[in-house]
Image (cartoon, rainbow, N blue to C red):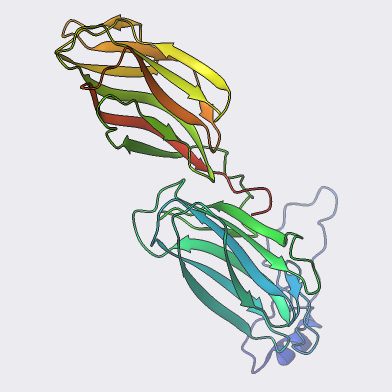
Length: 318
């Protein structure tokens, strides 16, 4: 209906005045176009705080728990869960629950006891700068009363916490921890003892893509040729073997670099390049090893570093 001219003391007075307004009708066939009119209508729905009805809420009770599982490779990062809850009396309760990460890549659980109402939103975000994709993965859900501990909560949202933006329910899609880009990391390996080779193990709760490996071998004056080779295994079974391009004689230092797309050759300055298989994905517990045929007691590996892309990979029950 159209709005009648004049001023009114209440919505009820305006409603009564509108009863005398002639409704708009379509022009007769062939008649000239009529000027447009603004159409207004009073609310037809009353909100009763004692009988709350909401279209996009998640009903929870006093016995329900908001629970989130956190996996992180970095200790001490400050994050938080924020939520809004529509109470039966029509008020909106809001809370912010901070938490701090533990960098062991294991499952750490946090909870908040809820009250009766409709959960309107729940978000996960960072409370500091410097948190990058791949450092912190959070799975947020609702735990119903009486459910066994091994029964996973009703999932609301899941994803990586990043300083630049939040994710949450109901606005964000649920993400798997191993999808998308991981965290680019440089992993250094401590120098082994003289005459010994080295290894690096994928941590529990992680998955790696091995991008490159580098290490410096310094040989003693003792006669003999040393032949380094890079191995990848699952802790038991050999999966990949890459031999360096050339052997190394006594009394010298050579850098060995392995990467996808590298040729197998020795450079003009005497360093060695070797290729890695494409798209190496390593599960937790898998190992990257250097074995040197002919290594002697005075030989020393140093400056050992791996460039990896890392995803957090919670266990099926974590």
